[in-house]
Length: 66
Image (tube, rainbow, N blue to C red; front, side):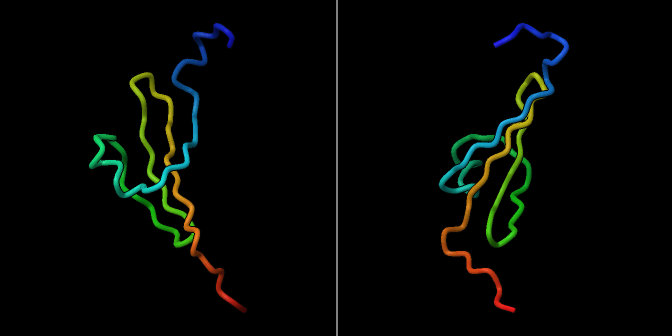
């Protein structure tokens, strides 16, 4: 860790979760859920302005065959 006040609020983190759709029920304030079939994600911002992305990877996703 380094003390760098000028970098405050410019961080980001990605957290893998079991169910993006349940975040609101757990009291997590996020944006809308974006569903891309193979992954769902939702973003939040902490009080300092850092971005938090919650991501769920679909274990059953099969890419379309050509």
